[in-house]
Length: 433
Ligand code: DLL
Image 1 (cartoon, helix red, strand yellow):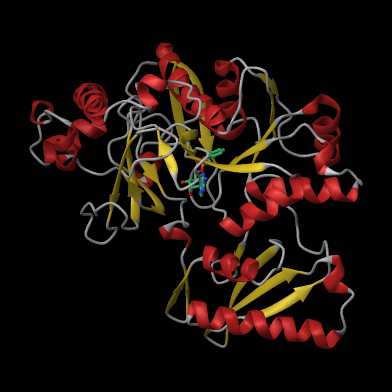
Image 2: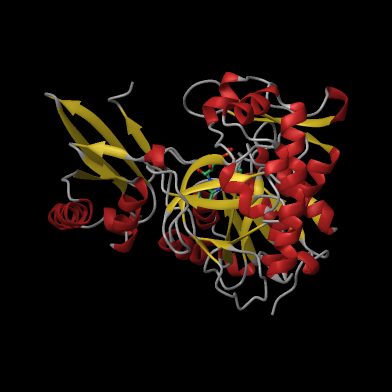
């Protein structure tokens, strides 16, 4: 049994949670119908009256919302409150199309902050800790999300933001940061910089890391834990729903507990749009039952995950979602075969390579060609050319048998691939350029 930020909710009996969810869904649907023209139209189109929603079980009667709906109503068209009730705007840049703009009332910021506060406590954080926030500050929700969570807990925030990695290391060392918050790829980079600066991670006060904003594998977790001498926890979220802290890992690390009193999760089959049972992977959908400014109904995240209601040894009763495996729109189609970048990462890391890689896809003579560039460690770099070629062949064969499609593998010099200070860019699809 661990510590909780809000034990009344985090360990609540399921019936109690369902009662909260039902009451909040009813209120939210009314808010959407009365205050968001887009939803009034959508509900009218299918003949749905707010009164038809009587409990959380009725959620399946509601229509889905897509990212395109936010874009079509750019920037503030889906907001349910007048400007004087807003206290914050964030936006996510996205790689394609217009940015997505989100807004918060004071209450929304508090509920969102609570998600991050719960995550920090679940990662062993206390009021006495120094929380080193290296997620970017600004329109991205990562920096301010963890910042407000740490303050709500009463811990001490060090708002470093991302970048200037040598300075990050200096601060970790001199200030005695206890918990590091950043993307997993940046955590790797910080670990590498620590090594280069000749600092033994065991001499730091750092105990844990709260890493998210991009998919990362169990192998990557082990790499980070080794290079920083910490325990690494996952945190998930997206700006459309709130930001970081929509779900978070506890010490058991078998899934991320969802703050389902604020953000109600469903998993659907992305083809049929029907809900799937516990344990089955599908597309994650959230309904913001605890949001005032931007109450999205059944928002299709495109993230691939599964949920489980199995009891957790940490004592939390909140449903758990599995570590997201990637996104439905991340999927590459290589000569007709579906390939997820996370599968490539899994193969590379399970063969003992370090997680510095990039996937390049091109079309050569009308044929898709995938090349995986992987950086060698310093010790591997001093191997003979023959050994290096053997390793390339081994990775090539493993990729072929896992993915069902061939890829060429190129091992490059140490430090030859770009490092990420935020979300890593793992795929360069030149077919789209
Ligand atoms: O990335 C919010 C966040 C900040 C989460 C800091 C965690 C920590 P967006 O920029 O809107 O918001 O991107 C959201 O990032 O739909 C997922 O595809 C991906 N993502 C976020 N967390 C995870 C995670 C923030 N733990 C999108 N594992 C989401 C895998 C993640 N993917």
